[in-house]
Length: 112
Length: 115
Image 1 (spheres, rainbow over the protein chains, first blue to last red):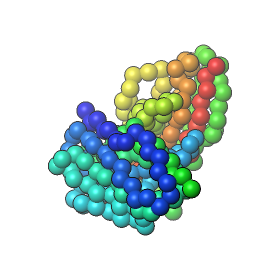
Image 2: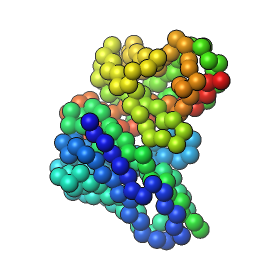
Image 3: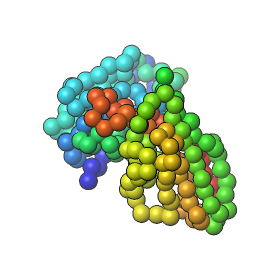
Image 4: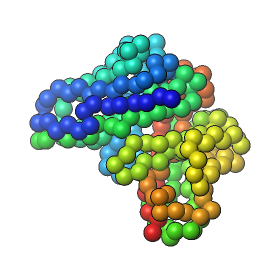
């Protein structure tokens, strides 16, 4: 059974810092891995999808890397802004391409 | 473009009452559909997923059930709600199995409070 952990659980930083959010998963036989953002009381917004054959994916100030064999993914946020404050979730997808297993999330607070 | 609709946004129901949450997807065919629950301070728990009409897989035994009467409609139900059913319920869809980009997209969620 896939288990996902995320470190740190919470992070509070001043505006402008570059950030690293970590995700680890126990079963490396994944199809894709997706990073999401969740604002309080809201649904999830997809940020990046990394296919299992890829090493990284970039979108604006976000860069996600994937080391499938070691069961790790990292989300880099460059030049953080207060608007980046949210909970960030990673979700590897099983190798059947059907189920996503979510980590507990990293709650990020960027202070102005 | 594809969109997902989930309603209602908030719901307060007494213990023992029935439940029906509805989710519809537009702009795609034969999507995979999912119901997740997020309890306060906890991660997302997969409740049900469906790869086609009438095909429902349950991940967690509970007093909830799901149905898919149409290709792009997914319904979460309960005959008698429990206090422990309170939480934030999220519907999601992704492209069919083995398409290259099975990215998941989520609805805005339903905040259910059982009193």
